[in-house]
Length: 82
Image (tube, rainbow, N blue to C red):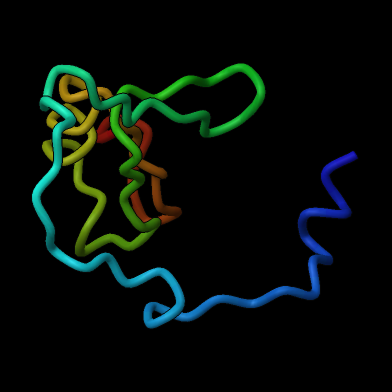
């Protein structure tokens, strides 16, 4: 089911999806930025921190979770830090 998505032949660069600034009639409260990290994990914001010990600290995990995002716990974190 998901393997087709991983094997997609279409590739995009930042230039392919570049947004051009323009006036909009959409109000901020009408925008929906929710997404899914997996089938069972919805996110309120489309942000996931990298699994790097210099990025994904416990404080980053707490901050992103409070905002509706998620942090990938890196392998150098002890169980106590998790």
